[in-house]
Amino acid sequence: MGKKPVVIGVAGGTGSGKTSVTKAIYEHFQGHSILMLEQDYYYKDQSRLPFEERLKTNYDHPLAFDNDLLIDHLHKLLNYEPIEKPVYDYALHTRSDKVIHVEPKDVIILEGILVLEDERLRNLMDIKLFVDTDADIRIIRRILRDIKERGRTIDSVIEQYVSVVRPMHNQFVEPTKRYADIIIPEGGQNHVAIDLMVTKIQTILEQNAIL
Figure (tube, one colour):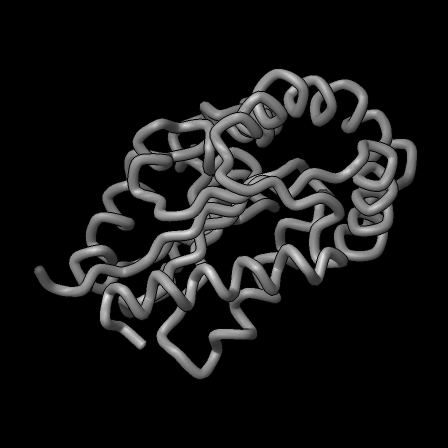
């Protein structure tokens, strides 16, 4: 049996620190063959919809994602075939004409709020992580990020959090915790959990004769 890439799913709510966990793992294996695949790149193409309709998009709902395309791309990467990763244009609320060429690697980190929600995605993962952080920490991180990076007002961020983000988290994101092999509290600050993950990934790579 030939070698097969290792797929690690990293889920968790907005502002939970899942990106920090992903980057910590990625940086540890940077000298090896590793790639990151972000679910955020796989929002559905909405070019057929009027702009007014696109503005109503709920980006925290499972139906916002084109998981069919994501799964197709994962299968290609698992067969050591390259992909053309889509790019999403948040200003136009639809998929951009641009793509990013991604070469296959031995380790694939799939990161996103709802990567554990779809059973088809879960079935492709070797390790499933859920980054679990208190809601008050997550909302503070989101406020700071959206004000600094996206030019939002504090009122608009809080209104969106209360009306959309929080109910979607409780309905769709939080329940996926039960599918996780490992739950990591406090995200990127949890160095012990990250070190354990790194050791586990190394073991799998050695078993697959990759390292």
